[in-house]
Image (cartoon, rainbow, N blue to C red; front, side, top):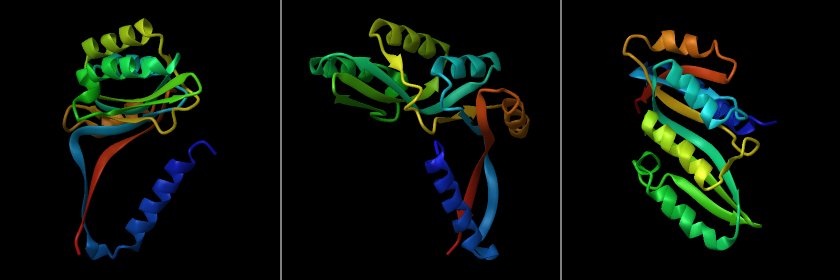
Length: 178
């Protein structure tokens, strides 16, 4: 089952919320100007980015994109140096992982405040260092989009019309009282 971690997390959240007394839940609201979304795991970064850009929306965060590079272990530091130089990967601290296993450098990439220049830089970087997006080992891709305030539900509904989008929702906030 490919989505087992997501289902377990949702089940845990549902059980937790249902176990709270009504008085414990002060409010259920959403973050204005933001929505959550998940492309299907087999959808590439480029395809995801192109859709969001075509809708004139802004990517706040994107998580869990995996890339591989067949090479020798001495290339690990070079790859780390290249990734560290990308502001859109490091705006919130080191936001990528790099591991080396059996002649393959495996990276997990997260993107922050991504604009067209950043996306084009990433496309060039992937090509110049021969990274290959690993679509079979990219579980649970998700992101946050900036949308016009007051139009959050419109954009949730709009995104769900596209075949590459697995889910979209308001970015809900739950406050609990003791």
